Figure: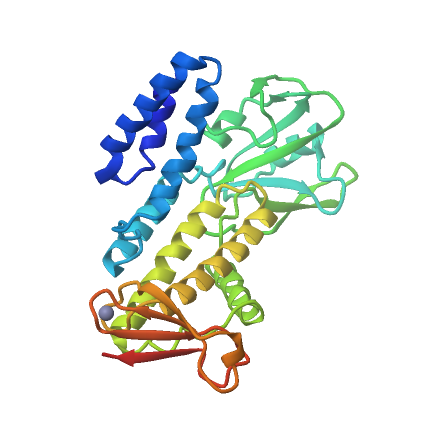
Length: 347
Ligand SMILES: [Zn+2]
């Protein structure tokens, strides 16, 4: 067991020093286990702290994942693809609708369903009635034609078929034959007293409309300046930098769009989209501010200059350098400084 813990901790240690580190810890553990067998497990836990210290002070650290622009876009593309593959399948096809009474209650009686079935509008392919019974439901035979293998909404235990339903309320769902948008919002059926009854058609899977998604993106962009600087930074110049910025935004937003589909409620999906878009735009701006405007690589080796007392008379902040040697980025430490928040110095 202690050997497995040591092996696990060794993965944190930089690869070049891993074998020596593991041999040393094994030797020490062997000695500790001989002297105090019960304390060996506690001793092994210290290996994680030691391994983390070595990782943090690695003189030749591995390049971060997002260091190069190609790797950044590749990682975002993989993220978007995984989110797209893993997104849950829509629970119902788009051409399945609920038919409800206009106003409340939302349910219909079995007699109303039979009148609807007898006066079925031309666009409706199949219509079915069901009634919930705790976890299961009973439904008319036409339910199979409406659902075509999909699950009945709001019923976890499936449904059984019945022929007679008697009085009492139930729910009606239907499948319409035209593709695309819902053909009508309301339909009328004859009522038993000789008049007409108005029924509502409600899509059960409205999907996400492009305009609604764009609207949420717009809201995310509007609230952004309240929480972060909107500027993509002094270094961003040229088509290449802007194209990279746009690609980051596009891929990040695609990942958020797919991921938000996992949220069950439409309200939650909209909120998830808003938060996700906000975080993506904010990350894309902050990431862009820390890149070389020429090669778009992540700036490295931060060095701190000056101290807080230099705010008025001298510059105080950090300097980052492009790994390819294109220039230096000076980032002011305080917004109160008379110097620009970011200044790019070409070498
Ligand atoms: Zn560069």
